Length: 414
Picture 1 (cartoon, rainbow, N blue to C red):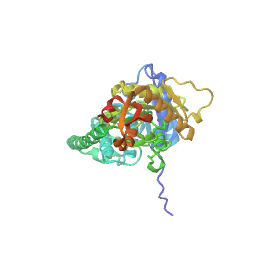
Picture 2: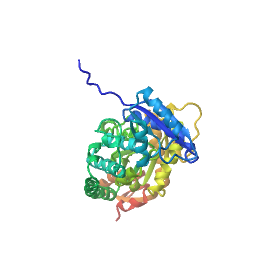
Picture 3: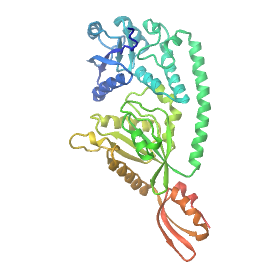
Picture 4: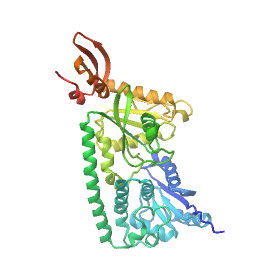
């Protein structure tokens, strides 16, 4: 009987701890193992080394290199994944010295993005990022360029394409950029229509696997379910849905790609238009996995990327999710914040309440007289404003409530 089951790739992880990365080194190595699992690899062993600075030729010292050779032979290792970004020369030297495929954290993340991309735009963005990453690695690569697809680090455009000349790669990148510009124009048109629709916009932002998609599903309703899994980068494409927070009051909710430590600059550039969805909202919900022991490092990573994307001026509500998985006392480090488990009905209600309380801070008070002959407008007003009271006057309804300052123009006038 022929066994058609694909053999799981056996992986050895390697990392270099320096004075620059020692605070986040442990968490990033744990994350590297999770990334490898997400990519379908089986982690067999892990090697780390403390150095003042990475070795210029091979990232690690000669003694550690010998240990790696021995571990590769004993563990029947297929691939070595480094936690640091390797230069093209380091990559070539390591593959020559170790005799197996060597990739770095950046290529691993690119590989996972290639696995996760579903939309035409997402696939183009990932391919663009991969080609920009691999272009400087074309020259003089022995084992790397002999790979014929298969295994971690070979998703997306494929290694066989990289055996052609640089001109082909550059032409492909130019064609992708042209295609993405057309998609970006369409996205901008949709974004402009959404901005002109007179609806308050909320965006979800956070570290990968913090529970953003679960929050989207809980607020939107299961009949419009967004894909969610307990895995890194479960969703890549920006998704916007309408959400009723109370009675008929409706907001738009946008979920986009999660962040991670050392997110490749190629991906940030390629996904610029997708990430900019977060810049076109009125309120950001920063979702944090409270159960993760390294959540404070995750918070700082997200805050840094938010700063890079120029999101600092947008109001933020911090949500510590997965509190049902937290052991012992939990002390939040960001404020204002709400602590909950979005998988519970109580958690969903707490989140809605927290959002409404935040809106009360951001909205302005209004008073309105609505003539009885225009009573048909009241249901529409309830959709974009928080109506607090409606009383009957002599000739009109007396309405009070709260509204986003930028939406005040939608209130009917005499």
